[in-house]
Image (cartoon, rainbow, N blue to C red):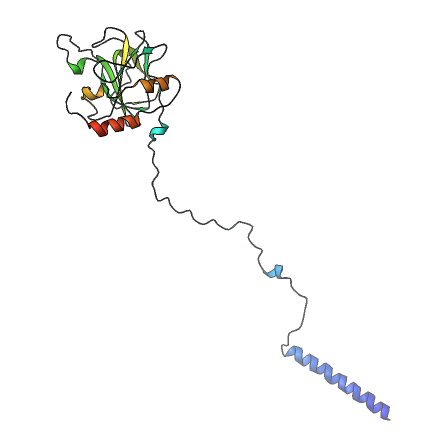
Length: 238
């Protein structure tokens, strides 16, 4: 009899326990389920690299002016030539070559002045007309290059026209105050740019630069011209 009471008591307890479980689920007690991996709910990291920080704008504007050290120079007369280290009255160089030999721009630059008519009169001997046919170029290096006694000047060579180092300007001649075929070559600061023939004809000795250019070098007269102008300025008259 005692054993049956125990059995009944255990059964009642199990029934009560089962009822409690059911009521707990209905009350909203969380029920453990399968674990969801984080990768299923978290978006995958981006495959693109992070954006690079913005590059600050340069504080110094870029310049397109070619520095003197970067200028190109070409011997101004094609073919076989001869020239000396001296010149009468003032610094310049006479480059002797047969009439008709090509004359080239010594460097990149812009044409300042052109004379296409030989107005020289030996009875008058006007200094501004002694050169006969001539071309003056302002190089990109800031130096003026002058050639005179041309036999002819290319039609494209006009004031304001741009020329490149080595570009043909015309041909060697003996116009103006010249008895032999040659190119008078002068180097000077631009000063008045046009009309100042007493400066334009030459203020420094060109021969050392011509030696360099003839041999494929690139010696620049910029520093010597700057020093000359610092000492002399721009003379207003011959």
